[in-house]
Each structure stands twice: as structure tokens, then as C-alpha cells.
Length: 159
Image (cartoon, rainbow, N blue to C red):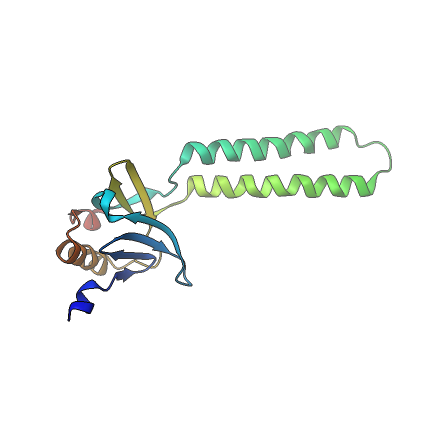
């Protein structure tokens, strides 16, 4: 009976245990972990899921801007027969452009997330696969009663 009480709670990509809260991949690998000692409150929200929007914006601007500048310079120098060189340059344009688009996609992504307020700020853990509001409410209620987390239970009804 004591083992059941200590077992971590899982819903979708979120796992809540006595030692902290984690976000997991589909394969079960933990990607983010917030230790219990720093957690002040748990709140479910819906909105932009990017945790560091300024860094994503800077990364997108740098990558897309760099790719655009190289592409523009390549267009301006279209004279001559340097096809192998141009193909290599196109590959080097594609890579930062793809990375810049991934930064941009991360920046504008919206969805439901668990905001974990800590002593040092807040973290956003994505709730992938946790679409049932009642199951989410039950998970947070059990986390509050079993592990003592302070939970804002009114938020799942609003999202």
C-alpha cells in the first residue's frame, strides 16, 4: 500500500512525483525536471507554449536573416557557371533557414501547458496527450493531496 502512495502520477507527457515534476517524451524519456524543493504552485494555462520567447525570436531573426542575406547575395551574383558552388551555398542557406523556421514555429506555438511556479521563476511543461479536463483536474487534485503541491484547481475549467 505504501508503494502505491509513492508511485508517480502520469497523464500525457507530465509525471508528478514526490521529488518533483517532469515532462516526458512519448518513449518515456524525461526531458524536463523541476525539483520539489523549488516548486511553489502548479497552474494549468492555455496560450503560447514557448518558454523563452526572446531567445527564440533572436534565434529566428539571426538564422532567417543570415539565410536571406546569403540568398540575396547569391541572386546578385548569378553570372558565371559555378553550379557546384551554388549548390553548396544553397545547402548552407537551407540549414539556417530550417533552424530559423523551427525557432519561429516554437515561438508562435499555442497549447495547454502546466505552469510550475518556482522560487526562481516559472517553467512551462507541455501537456501533450492530456486533453481530458476531468482527468487533468483529478491528477492535480491527487498531486495536491498525495504530495502536498499547492495547486490552482480552478484553471483547468477555464482553458
